[in-house]
Image (tube, rainbow, N blue to C red; front, side, top):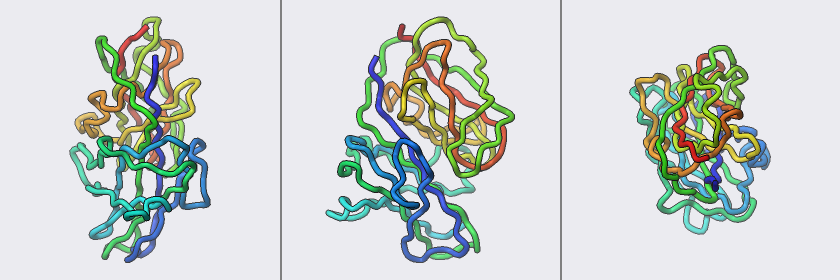
Length: 260
């Protein structure tokens, strides 16, 4: 079974005083996209930007953009719409670029810039970018959601952190191979994103987090729009990395189809 080759990266920085002109966010160490200094990550050959998400905190009229040398052929592309840190009710503002992905040069360094016009003395700004080399169509079959939870792991704030005590309700599932076609992460207040850690796979598909089971993440992560995000066997379900505050209380829902 072929899988979509997807990977999510993150940027985050806390400012004391707002930058009135664009300044680069710090890149979050990734392991797959290698660091290029402290503010950029190298984009592997063939990976194109398909989803951008910017989360602004406390500052007025925030602006985000993606920067890389090759993009200066026209201009650095803005991320819009932007998500407000105090937004509630789910359905986050996500920039969907699947119709015309942003293409980069081979192993090019990429970063995210931020600026604002005014605001509080201190604020943290974050961005998530999802890349794809390909998107494999969803296979035929009956789809259903499975739930996992971890009430004890305390992640490292604003770093990708593995849920060390993740337990799946349906463990083990009936013997077989399962394709993941949807991904929801519910985290504590301020949760930002999460990624799948699949056995034998280096790339890590992600999702935008919500804070409650009554909230809805963006539809791109529900409806199979990213194709087969990954596959796993019944006895080796994926683990999860989370990105956001150093708080406990995480739930995960995966929409899966049994394919073998």
